[in-house]
Image (cartoon, rainbow, N blue to C red; front, side, top):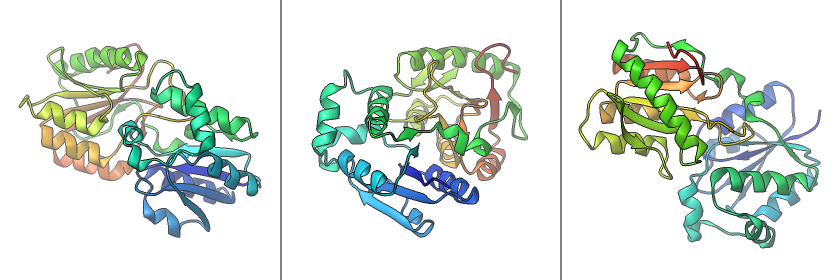
Length: 275
């Protein structure tokens, strides 16, 4: 079988993709980033190369030396980290790539990386093909269902989340009684939820949707147990995510925590009735 490359960001997703690839019998080469990638990945695969963010030329050199023709970009690199120059080590190829991008939006940067890899005949796969078991199902997943008023907030929040997604601001909104309490921006979902909690508004609804033109090769919406921790700290009551396009890492632990905190988790479609 052809060797698969994994470009691993933070969180558990790279470990899941790695496990899926190994279970299918693929040889794997992993590119990891110091300060971001979970160190546990080191013991899961023979070849792990630890680099600094921005070493684009080195990434390509490693992948070509191992005859890698397809890669998966798994895990998140917070965009705020790209603005902390001391965490970066851009090489000549990265600088040339960045000089051509029109802005620093997530999609723009990630598409530029994918284009750079494609120049070397390395294709970036859609991550959903390596993480199908993690995708949210439709319907209520927890013991507690949303109330009638919360279903209305879910529908309202879906419209708002798709609106900010279309502008590439973020994927998540926190709402209550058809009013927006917080909007995810560069800080990420969990910090946006906790920021909403600082206002002291209890029982809010968190809605996370894929962007209307989401590129499923990267930046796929994701939630996990820490999302429930943030909601518990903020006093939020419902989490609604787009079914089929949102990854739920450590799903069993996530639902267990939600049930304990009496939080509802639901998977909703991008259009039509939410319930």
